[in-house]
Every structure is written in C-alpha cells, then in structure tokens.
Length: 428
Ligand SMILES: O=C(O)C1=C[C@@H](OP(=O)(O)O)[C@@H](O)[C@H](O)C1
Ligand SMILES: C=C(OP(=O)(O)O)C(=O)O
Image (cartoon, rainbow, N blue to C red; front, side):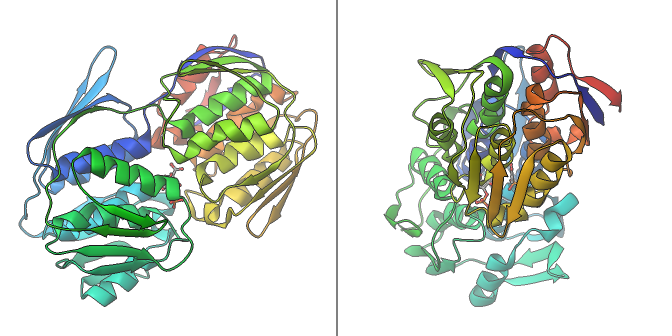
C-alpha cells in the first residue's frame, strides 16, 4: 500500500494502543495457568494473532471478544501433547518465536517453527547452543526457519548471552518455574534490553511465581510452581506512544491517553530523552500532551530501548544541532536493518544522517524536502517517517505503508483523526 501524507500541523487526542510486549506476556502466563484468565484493553495486531494462534495449537483455549469500546481476550490455560508435528507459524514476530520455542518443548510437542519476512534471518543461535548443551533435538534449515524442535527440559543451570536479544531470557524464564528442582538463568555477557526482562519478571510475579533477581542477567527460580489465572488490563504501549509524541513535537499539539505514568516498560525512556531534547511535554495525571517544539540534539544510548531508534532518528533529523545514537548494533537485527533503513530514507528527504557501526550521527536540518520513502517492510520505519511529516516541505509518500499492521493496524486511522487533510491511499 502507498500512502501520501500532506504536511500539516497535527492536532488532537490519540488513545494509545495496548502494549504489544505486555500482551504477549499476559497471553503466555494465562496459557500456562490452570483456570480462566481475562485480558482487558487489548489491541489486536499480526504479532499478537501469531502468539494466540500458536498457544491454541499448544492446547490453550483462547477467545477474542471484540467489543464496542474494548477488546477482551479470554484464556483457559493448559498445554496438551498433540498427535504428530505442530507447524507453528510465528509470522514476522520475533517475540512470538523466541518466547514460545521453550514452551513448545515444555508442552512435549514436536514443533516445526516457520515465519515470514526477515524472521528467518533473525538470530536463534543462543537457543541452538542451549539445545546442544541440554540434549534437545533440533533441525534448522540453513540456520534459520523452518526449525524443528523436540525434547524435554530439566531444571538446572541455563546460560545465555545477554547481548543478542532479551527475548531468549523471557522465553526461558517462563518455563523455569515449571521444572522440578531449582534452576538458574545466567547471562554470559552484559544484559541489553533489561527492561523487557523486568516486564517478564513482573508478569510472572503477578501470577504468583516466586523468583530471585540476583543482579541484572542473573535469576534463580525453584520449581515446580503453578502460574495463577488472572483478570488483568494491559497498559498503553510507550513504543507506540513515541510516534505520537514525535508527531506533536514536529508540528502540532497531540494529547496521548491510555498510558501509565509509572510504567515499567523500557520504552518509557522516551519521556526522559525527549525532555533532554528540550521537548515541551505537559502531563495531566497519566495523559501526556506534546506541543510543537524546537527540539535539540543529544546523545542517545539505545541499549535498553532499541525500538525507539527509528522515531528518535526521525525527530533528531529536524532537531537543532547534532544527535548521536549509540549502542544500537542490535537494531540491525529487527524487521529491517533499522540503522541503515533510517539513514537511507531520511537522507532521501533532505536529512543529514551518517551510519556508524553501532548507531547514527545526525545533523539536524530546519526542514525536510518530502518525497517518496520506503518502509523496508518494517512497521516502525513507516510510523517514524510518518511522525515527522509535519516538517516536510512537500508531500511524504510512504511505500509499504500496510506494514503497520504488524503492531498497530489502526495507525493510519489514528493519524487521520488528528489531520485536517487525512493521509491518502494512492495505491492499495
Ligand atoms: O521482549 C520484548 O517484548 C521485546 C524485546 C525487544 O527485543 P530485544 O530484546 O531483542 O532488543 C524489542 O525490540 C521487541 O520489540 C520486544
Ligand atoms: C522488533 C519488534 O518486535 P519483535 O522482536 O517481536 O518482532 C518490534 O516490535 O519493533
């Protein structure tokens, strides 16, 4: 789909969709629990559909109730061994794949994991090394997907590198309390994206699982324990909120509702970073208002907030002075090489962006030219470019705009709701 955006001030209120990361976690904890759980304030997306699809194949009973004002998900937990091999399609969701591979093994099923887009190129080596050590049988086509796995976990010491993806830690943490005897999960390197591991720990503790956080990357869990069913509301997604904050700061007044101020989400770091960039943000209880500001460049350490890199690079391109994004090498391993994609697309429309090995150096310019850009089949690239459209002289045409459905299917409707001239679909 190709979308044409007319540069304009963006004014209005956006109810931020539910956190994709939290929704994955609550679905998994509910599927592992005995009894029925209800998740409230859910936002459906392709990634969440992938997790639901596979948890159903593992035996959980999941019902999505789309209401007038709210979508609920009802989950009756319990995993079952199925006949034959389960073909588990994770779509393009790295979270779904890395979170559910250990659970597939725990369920006793033989599972063939498949995926689409760049998922097959995203790293799984930390799991292959663990499987070799634990005697789990697996077969990976040229190192990627389809990946067939079958085996049995036993409690004990689990070691993983913390600088490839925190998602491997989440996947293993979820199954440790289910194993008899004590287990420990140790990082063999510095831990990155630690906030996401803490979100997992919070979810587990809310389900009455006891675990000890010795220090970053070092966790101890006794077993077996039982996850408790729960009735829980999913809070607003700071990774998605970041696009609307940047849109307001670029040109307009955008109010965000649905967020939780004292959230433990790693991407809540967007608030501190924007304030450091001289952004004008007003706070009304949990709501945030972003007002057009002359933002200023700064140094941004992306180690624990990788998903913010596209939108911060976009905003930095029209901020005064120099911005340096560092510790972002892992961002090359997402749905696209996000460092390269943002450098190429922003430079196409008049920005001054230089790629480094692990980040970007950006010299702000007063305005961008506008023109045609690509999403690189990456939802966050598409949304980041849309967010700074108010600073383009001419129309911004985004190719591959449909990709927002991976995490935020309603993004273009929300964008239209704060526009005088709504985005125009110039090609389906
Ligand atoms: O655990 C999670 O929910 C996520 C972890 C992050 O990945 P990394 O830990 O690989 O940075 C992030 O990029 C992803 O969007 C969601
Ligand atoms: C990288 C992302 O998600 P995942 O790793 O789940 O594909 C994302 O949402 O930006």
